[in-house]
Image (cartoon, rainbow, N blue to C red):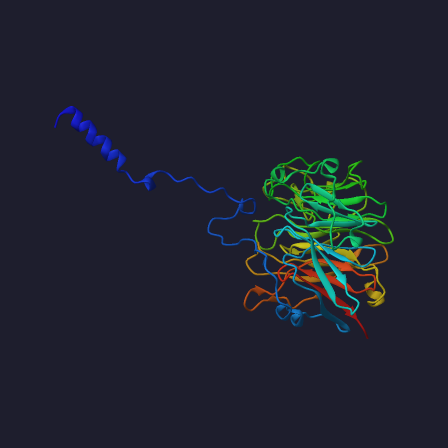
Length: 406
């Protein structure tokens, strides 16, 4: 074989190497999986994105203290999460993965009607009513729907306040903890969370893992608390007006530590300590030599990986007096735990000085321990004007109404 023939044979041989012999590009690791131990199969539970028929909503499985009853208030809202109530009694419901906002109104016969009033949004989890206007916070977008209850049939285009609020974008968050919880303070300001942009890492502690507040027009941003990893529930005490908040602790640190927690923000700018400390203890990876005593300790522990989310003080009169001004908390349920925990609603009991004396189960029955399955995921609680309590179930897209009679 001459030189040219040899070269041609070499080229043909190289071209015959199959494409799969080349090194394959690795798929990017999703934000929630960063730090997951090798071999672990733990992963978030994807919510159901189709409507659950009424006869499949597990209201009969719910267990409550004596005298309380549960009924289906509304259903057919895939991904139902955080709630807000309009002046005329319309319940607005936000979502995460499905991108919708629902409105639930009462019919003359006592039944309810559900409408989709916004869709195609990115995680419109945060809802708050300011007067007759509904604010929807979808990651960094802030949309204001004026006179919303008078326009449920044909919802007009909202006022876009995104630039005024200037919140971190989805890209800034890197896919981590960018959904919002919002509430109206007794001072007329809008309060919300800005979650940390990782599981645990170094970050700008004035920008992420914070509680902030604004005037309703988006002006006068104020830092209310820092070092609070991911709070998706907060409320003001009806008497002291102090801000209280739940927070979700870090993942991939074992089954029992750290616990999710409840915090009483006694002074503006309070530092909860994340990432250096959790529940008053140093983080083994990110403590950086910090003394945990310099940070505010939680008012109550809510269990490891329970995903404590929406919380409200009970201000109604339907429930027994023992529940007045106590805190109802929806524990969404674990994914970063070897066995399922929570999937319930608990009550943090406060004494006259505002100290938590205990955390008691209130709504149970949605977790099947024997088969390690869950029937629904309580996500938010809301006290209605008649004193009943609504609980949103993200997995079935239903609202449960809890009432009491002797």
